[in-house]
Image (cartoon, rainbow, N blue to C red; front, side):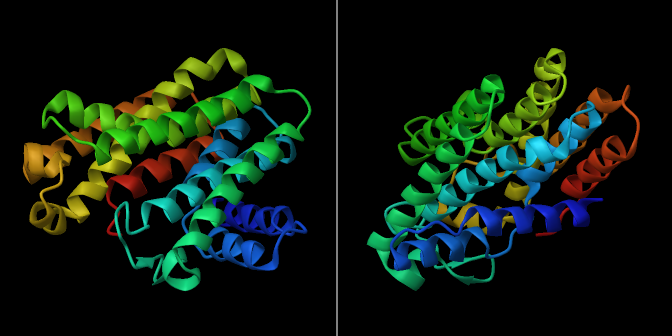
Length: 265
C-alpha cells in the first residue's frame, strides 16, 4: 500500500508544482520537491485519514501541502548558515545546485505554496490549522536547536518534539480532522510517538558524526544502548494506540512502525 500511496503523492505533487512563477524559482522548487524522499509525512496523513474512514481524494492536497512544508525545511536546514550540508537525498543540496539566494527563495516559495494550497481547499479549517501549527512548532524547535544553551533531558525532548515530531503529529491530527475529528487527540499522541521513534533511530544512525560534532542527541546524551531501548518502547506505545484499528490502512501503519524501528538509512 505504501508504494501505491507514494506514487499517487508524486503525481499530485507534480500537478501542484506547475505554477507560472519565475522559471528559475520554479526549477529550484521542483528540484527539491520532486527529488525523491520517502514521503513518510504525507503517507501518514493519508493512512490515518483512510483508517478513520476518510476519503483520500479530499486529503491528498493537505498531504501535499505538508510535504511542501517538509521540503522547504530541508532546503533551509542545508544552508551554510544552518547545518551546511552539501548533499540531500543523494544529490547536491539546493543551495549547491542553485546558489544560496535562490535556495532561500525556493524554500520561501514552497512554504507559501503550501499555505495557498491549504487556502484553496473548502472547509476542514481544523486540519489546515493543524498543519500550519505543526510548521510553526517545527521552526521553534529548529531555533531551540540552533541556539542551544542547555544540555538537559528536558531540552533534548523539547527540541525534538518540535523540530522532528511536530510534522509527524500534524500529519496524524490533520488526517483525523479530515475523517473523524473525535480521534484527533488520540492520533496526535500517535504522531508524537512516531516522531520520537523517527528521531531516535536517526540519532542511532548518525551517532559517530554527532559525537564528533558535539551535537545534543539521544545517543550523545543517553548512549546507544539506552536510546535503542527507547526506540523499542516508542514502537510499543505506537502499536498500542493502533490496537483497536483494523483494515489495510491500519496494517500499513503497523508496518511503518516496524520499518521506522529497524531502518538503516
